[in-house]
Length: 518
Image: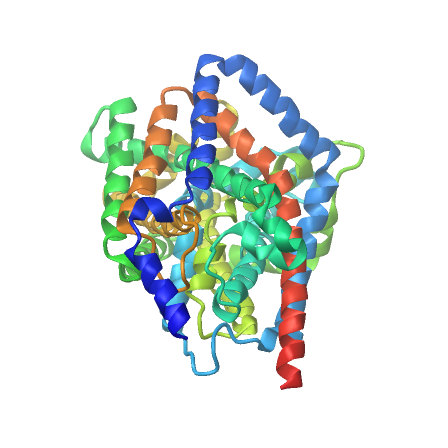
């Protein structure tokens, strides 16, 4: 016992530079920076190569993504209702650190960035332009259903399976290395400390950096357009950079408040989110339509879930699953690198069954509510009032301008846009605050459970996460290319997820066997 205490004290007394895993920190960061430079110097050539690779993975290997997505969902449900679900993340005396509401809001806001608001407002219009949707039965029925499917149980399954594995590793096994490779140790054994473990961590960090560098590209133009409309500003690169710096300032500030800062920010984000939902639901005059369409879409998804999950369009008559479903499963694969460690970390004192069912419950509640209310209001404007949002996009109109058209139909729309901006900034800040916590842990050779990374390391990553998007906004093609790299990176990450899942079953089985023998 004294030896462990002495070791811990010795670790704490070491200079920060001696604690850092410089290889895992510098190599992936350097790789992403080199790629960014390459994309900016050779935008056309790099985009073509990446498009070909991305197309091959989607067209020829699509079944891999589909089977993995459905398999992960089934696996999480099995874990919850099997003997593994009874395992408590921590000691018998440990109790949850956060209330159910705090815990649930931290899961939702740290996992879904401002992208969810962006897509909630316009994704239905993108499906409306697909001939496959028309063939299925029309926009009303299916353009409201597919957002729930693509952002639904399978998407959350990727987060939850890893959160369970990491939570078990951290709180039951007491692992001091908060890394992807360490979750594979039950299978890899001593190879975890070799080049194989380094490779796993490099892939994970690379996907994390690339993914976070591109997520700003989706919603930042909407933020710029909204501010321009409200305050009469001139839209352009300078405004975009100012917005990015503002977001970075918010989540960098919360770094210095640690987990309490994340919890507070998650609460504020949730209140703003609720306010935005209430504004759309009750101020737009389409309350009945929104609720009825959402209820119908939810039922339609449940009824057709298996078919939607397994449809591969073998004859490539429309390539809808390749363009949408497989793309989304790949997107969730690389994006789930970010927050499962965080979810596992804040779940101490809860059973695995509670983590699985609670994760799905809170995650789907927030996601479905967002798409049902925000999305169906826009759908009402097209289906009932003749405002052709999908046609506007099909004719080359930007997604941001399409969303502004929807806001124009609301009363006090300028105040509504301000509320949207505040909510998006809060979502971004909460998500990236939790991500800096995760990636900072990767920068350590060893970090004890419950110990937070040094604020200087978290601040470093907070700055890095915003510098890359700023560098990339000068080339739209570069942003697309980096996003393609992230999607491609999902292929090996899928294999790593399989390894982590198998390692969890092996380690948890040994734990239960040992517990039963006592």
